Every structure is written in C-alpha cells, then in structure tokens.
Amino acid sequence: MGRNMSRSTRPAVVAALCAVGILLAGCGEKVIDNSKTEEAIQSNLEKVLHNKVSSVSCPSGQKVEPGATFTCAVSFAKGQQATATLKIINKEADVKLINLRANK
Image (tube, rainbow, N blue to C red; front, side, top):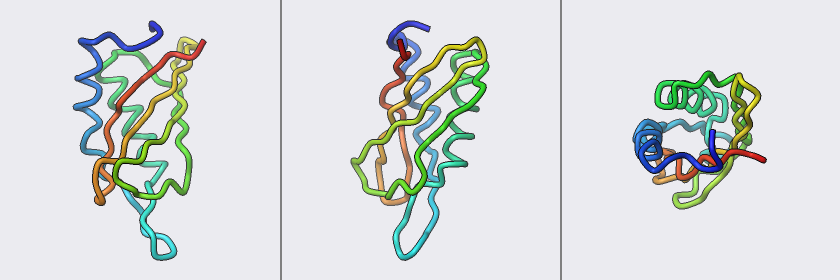
C-alpha cells in the first residue's frame, strides 16, 4: 500500500463507507458504536482494496457531532498499518472515510 490510496481507489472506499449510520444512545447523548464501525470499515476495505484486514481499532465514546472527524487504526494481514480518518456527516451518525494513510 502506498502512502495514500490512489485517486481511483479512494472514491470507491468513500462510497462504501458513506452509509455506516451506527450509533448508540448513552447518558442522553449519541455516540458512534465503535465495534460496528470497526466491522464495517474492515468489511468495506477488504471488498474495495482486496487486501485482508486483520484488525481495526476506533475510539469508543466518539460523540455524534456532524462535521467532526476521528481516526481509526487499521492493520492489514501483511503487516501494513494505516490510519483511517472518518467524518461524521449527520445527526444519524452516518460517516464517510475521508482519508486512508499508510503509516511509516
């Protein structure tokens, strides 16, 4: 995997992750369900990139604030590491992948 995803691959990954509307209501506020988000990222990256993902780790307790971004760590089976940046696009907790960057 290069430093950034290719321009031709990035739109497909973004489209695949646009509808990950996953949230939990906790203590009166909505937060992203990190477990379901991790599963969705793993599944979609494997489908689009045809590269086995061994794990995805997203922060727990991420508040649903449209426009906010957060990052998840991605580990590929071949030992490659990447950081996925996601943006919350609405109050329903739909997120989209805005960047996938290989770690050095």
